[in-house]
Image 1 (cartoon, rainbow, N blue to C red):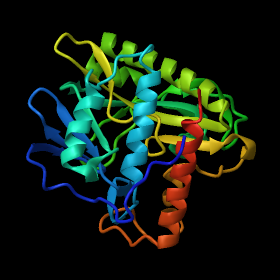
Image 2: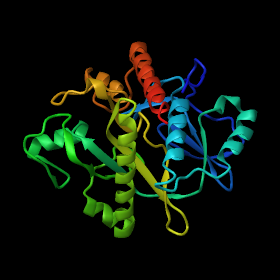
Image 3: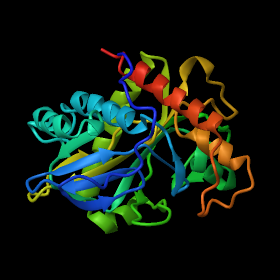
Length: 300
């Protein structure tokens, strides 16, 4: 699919809409439409839970369009948060506010769960660091001969807390059950693994490896579970190029890891204030987001 068009100047904040703002996240801003929420993805950059001064022009549009692509294809696996007349309602708003075109989702009013569902198919990032200590990840016993970027025999469900500020904290499955209840947690785990399996098989067709990803879920008044927020984007997932994969070393990122790698190379304590990002890092990151978009939306 061709890349969507977007302005050269990044959209970093939204203060001019005639709707009540109910939340401002690191990337998204949420407004109340009375019967639904309007979720808008800005072009803000965040890493290590810090928001940077610079923006990534078009990022919010790319993230939104990839999420919409996946929500449509995952409808047979799970309920999702988009309202039924989503496209028509977005057009009404974009006709009045064209700067929001492509970066909106109109979603049901659901109660977000207090955990995030992480699924890992490969040993990377914090999971690799944990494994190096004692060959386990949050209670999962693993073979002793794994290397960095090794493929796991079975994908692992490793939930985290959902922090309102600061860092999310990895927790055991048993702790997650205490937070949201056994029956809800078991269903979330089942859905997460099913989505991960489906996406992994789809992505193999376009040359991408889904190393790990984050899902978020919410409940309606009847305690029915819905997939919410974003899904399978380079902001919430770790993507690698299949043809370049080499076990035993870090992989070339097709996601936000490119920015993290740069930040790990400089003298910064991962606390505000955020350092300035070189334009070369910003532009290279955008290229990788665009490549992910083109590969993912090429799937049938």
